Length: 241
Length: 296
Image 1: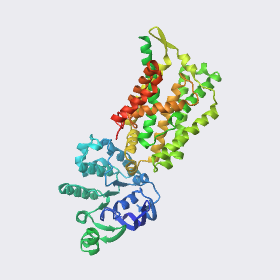
Image 2: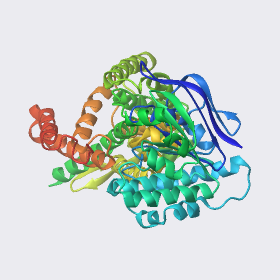
Image 3: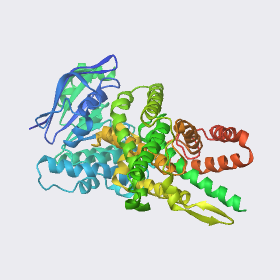
Image 4: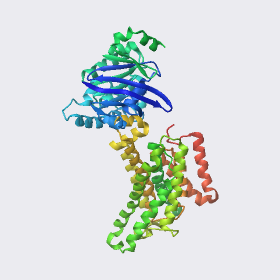
């Protein structure tokens, strides 16, 4: 079952044509990685899906609904969780308040979807990152880089999402912590959430992705399994530069 | 000694009015990063509308029916009207400008200031409007050998209540969390499902309400005249420069400092009263460019 389908999108940043007909698909309970070097168009793709950048052409379909013309907050209401590259943790709000903002909406997202009783989003968020429980009283600005990433992902989980967009979730983390985050992504997947993750390193992406796309200069140059990607000369050349 | 006490009471009266105006200015800047030059005109409009409402009630001989409490309750209607004006201004004039640089905000809000000044001239004419009936009916209380208007103390109470109410609203309610989140990162707020456009309209309307309330509470003590908004705008800017634009505590402390210095200035050094205020603002800017409570 397809959760998200990006159909041949063209996106500009100012006058610059960044995405040139990018298409991709995320199925239910699937971890999909979008791999590319810096400036390849990963963040632009994620931001186009979230609705921060208007499309010049193409379509974004989520749970059989065309989102192309919807504002970002309307997309969030439909169950798309987002953790940006800079985490976007509100610096002058407590972690608790950061989480609560999503929680208020999360209840609405659950009701809107099918009205079915779902596990408590807070329990799920803390199941992914129990560490966040000890940070609740801290201000956003008092968190370390790794803690900020944890809070950003836990906050996105509070929304009861059916799709999570993670932009460079592993960037800047120590190798030990990367393992912790890999484990968290697996837990989220096991909760029935689909994940689209932008990632610069093929090795890290290969460890968790069910499928991956490789993007270079705003175009998808590969789609397939991680092992096939490693054997593809064009992919390796594009990623090495 | 009595004069001294009265001057202190006057300072608090003026601080309460200045706080209402500066808090609105600060709230709008804090959430939307718009320096609203029309804020003083909205304050003056609040004064005019409130005086007009109270004047109409008195004109229709409703004074007796309403009683003092009823008359006092008419005053915030002016503030509500200004909030409604704000809710019209934000989506039509300001929303198209958020992506543009600050010069555009200044130009548009300055244009709005001129338009509002002319609208007031056209609608209310050149005759000053006052709601002095309220002040007269509240009477005076003895302070030492002199009498002091009870209404002024009422305004101080309104100022204190507004400060506590606004603080509780911003720091203790769900909407306050949403407001602060939007002010810190509007993109992320949108990504968490917050309708940023709606928050902006609400924030601007609340800011305008505060300006209107400032005008509403001042008009029983001081008549609404043309140009009322300009003088206050300058003082409100001195308040937020000292306190820090975007900070509620800053608006409060700044308002107290400015009104005490101003009252002392009028008493002891009337020729350089405004110059002293600017000097203090300049000194604060040199030592703490973001104001006493401002953020970088």
